[in-house]
Amino acid sequence: MLRVVAAVIHNPQGEILIARRPLHKHQGGLWEFPGGKIEEGESAGHALIRELQEELGITPTEFRPLLTVEHHYPDKSVRLEVWRVTAFDGQAHGAEGQPVAWVQAEQLRDYDFPAANTPILKAAVLPEVYRITPDPADVGDLAAWMTPRLAAGEWWLLRARSLSPEAYAALAAEITDLCREKDVRLMLHGFSSLALAARVHGIHLTASDLRALPDGWCRDEAGLSAQQYLSCSTHGTEELDKAWRLGADLVTLSPVRETRSHPGMPGMGWEVWEKLAKGSGLPVYALGGMQRQDLPLAHHHGAQGVAGISGLF
Image 1 (tube, helix red, strand yellow):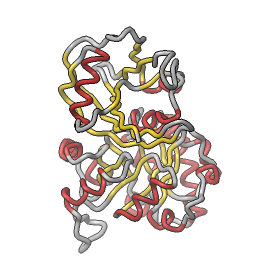
Image 2: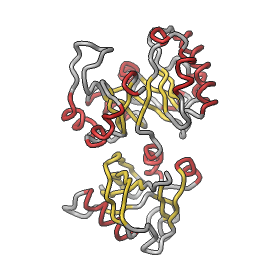
Image 3: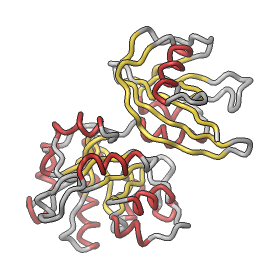
Image 4: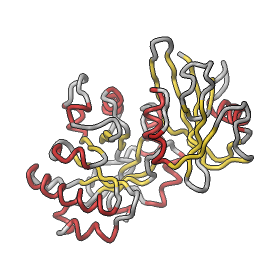
């Protein structure tokens, strides 16, 4: 399998750099995230620095792993080891004569990419904070509680375990309208509100939902389009592997620490969490006792970001 490093490069204006593949190369003429082949015996981090120096004339100074993607074309198999670059020295340009462009995240869908880049396109625009609503039983009017806390571009998961499926669906309809008004990306919990799936950013499966699904399950059965997201709750290797096989776009992995909502359940700790997350091949959010100030620590251990309820508000 061909090992390739790819970079999602951000500038201070919030744009992402893409480059067009030469016509004579595999998948020529399509746009891609810059990078190239990892040489024999070379680390992915060293390959990242070397490729960006050669292709773009820049040296990354702040970068971290984002995800790993495997894709099988009819003529070759590729393992993409993707990194997020948030700072670099130099002026990015097509040092090998290739066209390059800085584009806003929401504009990426307007460009044609190789099929192997689809998971990267989704991961590239994921937030660092994945907010989970408290249960309505704890706050009363959830819509009123959320309204002053919503900000455009945020991602929220509507969780309401105390409600019946019918009551959840009714609440989801109300919260969906609120989030669309505020330009907030809303994920719905489980299969209770599939009728609303086309109006939200995606659905989030519980660990129980995930374990119950057959391996042949397809996201089309949940009414999700290619642009929408499938998120899953996981707690260990078995669930992470299942999420990968079902084509999840992101997962939460918990608990990192003991939480008030699950007293007596010990956290796995960062060392175990990191080992599980880095072997998953998916963008993973740290969940369980997380607070906003934990974000740098979560990044250090390979997280896409942090998820939580009380600690993030």
